Image 1 (cartoon, rainbow, N blue to C red):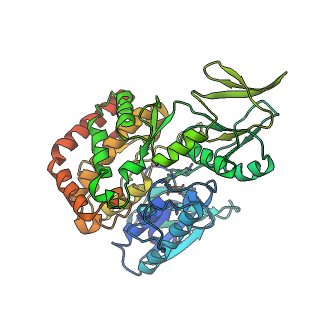
Image 2: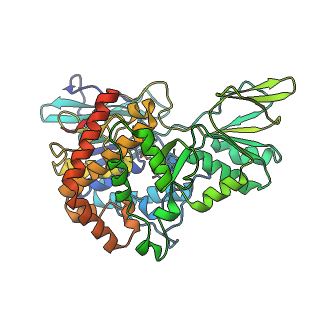
Image 3: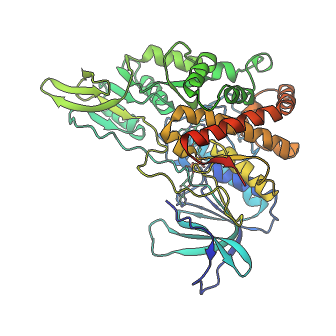
Amino acid sequence: MLDQKATQPATGQDAPVTTYDLVVIGAGIAGLNALFAATAYLPKNARVLLLDQKQGAGGMWNTAYDYVRLHQPHPMFTVGDIKWNWQKPRDYLAGRDEVQRHLAGALGPVADAVNLETGFEQTVIACDEVTTDNGYRARITFHPNDTPAQTTTVHAMLAIHASVLNYRMAEPLDLSASSVISIVPQDLRDILAAHPGAAVYVVGGGKTGMDTVLAALADDPKRKVSLINGRGTNFLNRTRYIPTGLKRWTSGQLVSRLFRDMALNFDGDNEEELISYFRRTYSTDPDTANGVFLYGLQSEDEQIRIAAGLSETYPGYLVDVTDGPDGPVMELQSGERLPVEPDSIFVNCTGSFFRTADMETNARCLSPGSTVLNISARDGFHFLTSVAGFFLTHLLYRKDLKGKGFYTLDHEALFRMDRNAWVGASAAQAYMNQVIAVNTLPMMLLDRCGLDLDRWYPFPRRMAGLIRMKSSADTDIAHCRKVLDRVADRFNIRCAPLD
Ligand SMILES: Cc1cc2nc3c(=O)[nH]c(=O)nc-3n(C[C@H](O)[C@H](O)[C@H](O)COP(=O)(O)OP(=O)(O)OC[C@H]3O[C@@H](n4cnc5c(N)ncnc54)[C@H](O)[C@@H]3O)c2cc1C
């Protein structure tokens, strides 16, 4: 967790401190989009420093499990409007290493636009705002990962801190039984190879869980694979809402319209109804009782393969697996106790975000002197950090960030309190901030945001959607604001205008 003090005098600085025009902390998709946006405002000779703990750019795609794939078409997972350097079909779902290479490659065009220095394998330990003789400055302190004593401090006109959602690898579940194998997705392939006949229990029904079911079945279609499903996760139906071929013209729906529909169906109190509405209207499995939605996408084909391949699906949560006199026993939160085969493999797919005991530091989106911009989950602009990186940076450089009605939301606190209320609030915030951005920023600039899933659809459909978005902007914004204010009151969390 970084040290994030309020603005203070930069005392005790004897040696002259290097001042950069911009320092970006975090070379994941959020930091890279911020960097990309900043190059529109910085001169070619601007001194820019990019810092990251990892060996190269790409963020969590450097360390995620090897069978993870994008769940949206790859062209919409990018930096600015940088194109993927290949000719694969647009609906191809890129794999981990392909995503990492694309993100790392995006540094090329950015480096051409400014005077970019990179500091990989560097840990940033503090990023705060200080007052100097020349006015407010960001102050960043970092050291090589393995040499904590060798700290460097630099100043910057602006620091963009895009490391806050840092993806943490899950640990294997701490199970009492010694006769079963407890692993994380990163170890799946090796463990499957070492235990060819062993049953697999996938713990968690979200995106990682679904990837893991498919990976285990692809390894051996005859293997017994079961799912411990928690409340059950709903997925947006990619077949219907990201349709291919001619259907892009005739069916589906702009993703921004879907967000609007979710935002308008949320009143600040009815999150359970909202999720049930989502399931019936937009999901791959409308007839289940699945109780959560975490913005994952799935195709109908994937859903069918998973349903057909699973031996068992257990609703509820796993408590423990113990060694009994007749072999290992799995205990569920419902109190049910079920025998499992010795050597069974339990894969922890229970999620990697917001799992720590402590929340991240509650740093404000923008420091008082506007020199530290946090792409943050605590005072977040959008649940997609990539989108936040792109828009916050443009809005800040254009001096359009404050006083326009944009809302920030404490995503982490709300997510930990109530995931379904978080979905309603984050949909309302995402839609409202998008509408305000569309009304604030020039069209040419909006067009450089390659992350927009509406870009899946042909230009005339997008233009028609934009006109509709603008025509209902005032009433939609008023609704979203009311909903977000209600959420702030109800959960006593920060959810307010960015002023
Ligand atoms: C398993 C999984 C699958 C996902 N799949 C998708 C998907 O298909 N589509 C999608 O849109 N999203 C997906 N996501 C969401 C994902 O979080 C985003 O896609 C995105 O890659 C996150 O980028 P980021 O830049 O916010 O964070 P990260 O990628 O985590 O980047 C943050 C960077 O900051 C660096 N950092 C952290 N702390 C410090 C420090 N103190 N000093 C220096 N550097 C530091 C880290 O090393 C890291 O490189 C997935 C997430 C997970 C976990």
